[in-house]
Image (tube, rainbow, N blue to C red):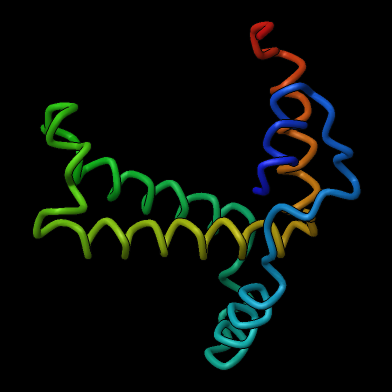
Length: 126
């Protein structure tokens, strides 16, 4: 997010429909091709994808489960770094695939949610 967009979001002034925050088109295409090549369309239902997403989030949580806050802050300097990256990648892929299957414009949804959050939690006056 650019500094200007970040500031606008913090103040609740994001023009959500026009803000381009994330680009998922390439990943959507790659994930669709991956599923098509394996004939997985029948398995990529919203329910199945949502469940798979929750499993991947749980796998990420498991990495941090018994760590202190200090240990969690430095996890990327440990042998778990690659594991964290892989779980985050799985989460991103399932999230993008689920949004694609549901026809959700993830960029619009994120931009709209940033506006809602800025209105709900306004930044304190400077």
